[in-house]
Length: 209
Image (spheres, rainbow, N blue to C red):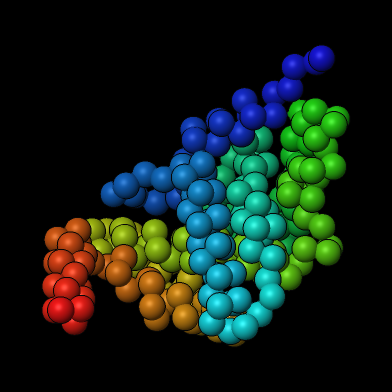
């Protein structure tokens, strides 16, 4: 059986730095970003199903999220302002992404190719799920901006405003729910989070007694 380099390549996502044009208080790599996007995708889909009575395939969406930046092992992380500078650059980059996805798929063992093809190479049938993955991707960038700005790094001030506006314009109730219920905690310190948790525990204890 021929050796496959598939996972060996994916493990190298941890060496690819995000936000490379900006000063960071805490550096972030593509591997941890992929985990965060998968986590947020799960939450968004759960909100859709449990709060808004939708029928979203959460498991499939999370799997797509897990691999959504896999091609960056070949392309690197291209900063958004560069990628979207003009239509010509954006179209060229999309062509590069397609070539990178083909190259990555060539490393997958033949017997597993049908399993990973729809995860690495976007399928038309998964466009509804991709909407949640893209929203999660943007939310993770927003949470990064909040964390950096809360740490006194004004480098992320403009990005925070722009991404927040973009998220509010998505017209996705799941995103609005997330921004109102979950995102504000990212502005708090560990002591503030711990104090809230302790007080919440005391309140629950008094209620149960």
